[in-house]
Image 1 (cartoon, rainbow, N blue to C red):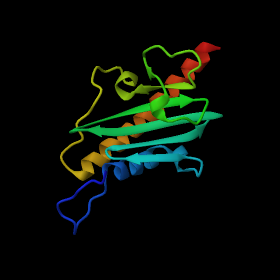
Image 2 (cartoon, helix red, strand yellow):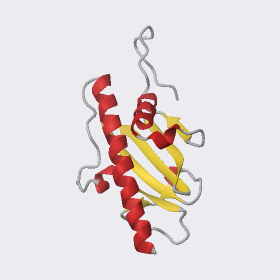
Image 3 (cartoon, rainbow, N blue to C red):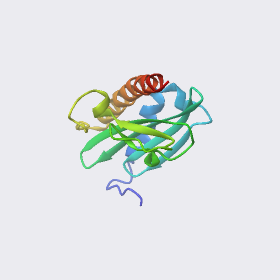
Length: 147
């Protein structure tokens, strides 16, 4: 499905393009050739190598709200195949993912992006950085506790 624009003379970047730019700015590991991007309508996620495994970062929009997830896995799967934490992880699952709201300890799971393109880009970049820092730390602690 293609996003439709009213003003074809001044095309704006899609949400996925803005999200990819924000992720690449905030997370240098996603700039490597091995990073695999998945861009859709109101959704952008990337799988990239991290510490001998795979890390995932996802930003998506639903209506007027944006949210994100961070994941880690031992196999190159789709982020949607990873079970969502803090719920149980089935035996044999290649990894897991967690929402930004759970990482920051807030009940809020989605954020309002602001009123213009610039504020949306800034919010996406902040979310990508927050996911990268908190998500990586979370999964490193999880791995250390499992040893």
